[in-house]
Image (cartoon, rainbow, N blue to C red; front, top):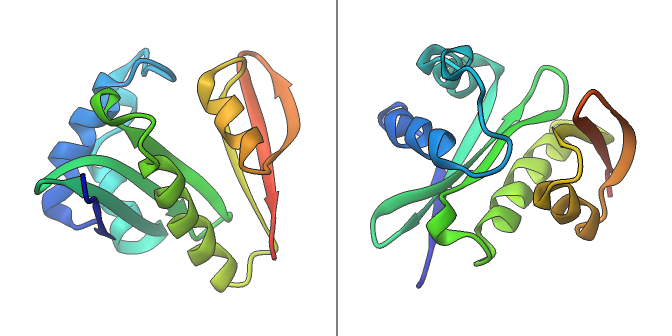
Length: 141
């Protein structure tokens, strides 16, 4: 496996949406809450997205929010978990936000999930926790 990473494009939105709906953690209780327009807005005006491709197939993606310096999304197709794709996509997103001048990046994820453990291992600090979600912070370089 030799993944390719690139910026997300509008044509990638259907595949990113499918990945978001097949994850086994942080499952959307109401899939209509996240619309294709929201994906498009983050590509066009509110942020930037990246995808990871394996054999030409999009298998993971991330989005960074340029408005508040947060990670809006980081999801990996369950068939490709544990291969370093999420780590690389997260790095692309945080590096971009730091390059914009943010001194810290925030994100939220489900409490007591593998994702929460993943962020902790990568040096993110737990800032708050409650109502099933935890907020993590990564300080800039």
